[in-house]
Length: 148
Image 1 (cartoon, one colour):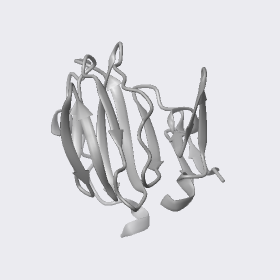
Image 2 (image 1 turned 30 degrees about the vertical axis):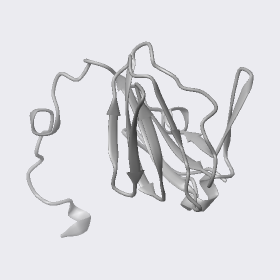
Image 3 (image 1 turned 45 degrees about the horizontal axis):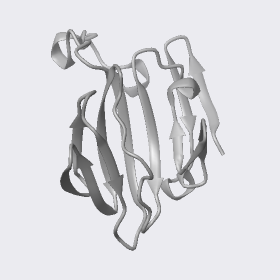
């Protein structure tokens, strides 16, 4: 299903399919298979973060809670609804909900609805960001030649 569509010196682009197809991916962990999970780091050659696209089917509960040693995570919910739990606190989630969890936060989530829950998870080393957005961007004068 995954198709690299274009690669250059400074980018990689891929087509992973529509959201409904993400549910067909699976990632193997020791003693556990995560269905509906597609990691993008290796596919895109990322060096400073990990991103995954995820689909949790209706009625499914994550079978464990977890923390991270070094990476904070951001969960971006793009379709559906459910519940997220951090350190015992329940947070309702739906399209547009965004949650950051630090390394030591005990996290888990469930889809207690009748529709699939679609979300993106971004991991990056906690406290590693030294600049962002305007501080890191460099404006190149003029519009791209192809867009003139």
